[in-house]
Image 1 (tube, rainbow, N blue to C red):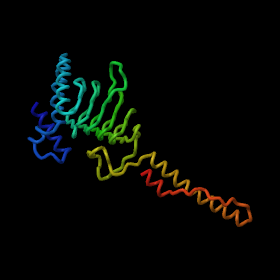
Image 2 (cartoon, helix red, strand yellow):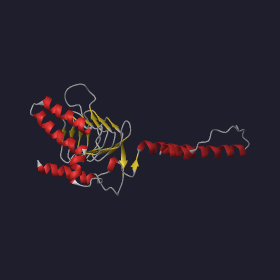
Image 3 (tube, rainbow, N blue to C red):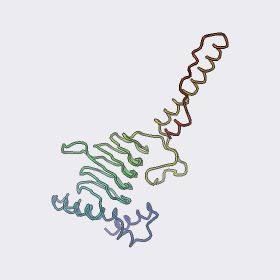
Image 4 (cartoon, rainbow, N blue to C red):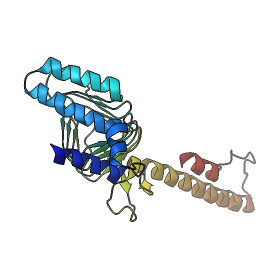
Length: 242
């Protein structure tokens, strides 16, 4: 038990540079407190003392602002940073070395009994305000961006952002696979934004070609409608997309 406590305290130092000492972690970190309560509540739940488990969970929610159902299965070195507003449902499963930020929901999309909450693999990072809904799996090492709403499977190592969440290509040599605060890396190649940029570039190039064609027709004596089409401000559109 003491080894597990030491492990939990070490995780805080590893993932939160604001932590200054073990006593501060033990007394002032709601994520640490929530896990202590959850282990006891989970033990009661598995011992068929379900009402007591729910009561301990309720007290934990009141004290920490973090709601973890006693039936949820959570692995080792789990860290909740800040914590307020985190909700973890009954059939949620969380692997080792996962990190959740404030406002995260691991929720269900059905009123039916049985598996209805997400499964997170090992080393998953979920950014602030993200919602992962339904009995889906988020693969090992995946990152969920802040405020994303995830309703489909996320492959291992992938990064998902947006509403509804979509997989984006994340390239950041400086991170080199290490923990990324708030599930953010410096270069997120969003396929939707890239497609819009490509479309804007195509429109600009097409406008240039049309102007050349009209100029040549006018030179050859063709009758050209002098009314100008509205100009496309590519720079302004690109800034809006970014």
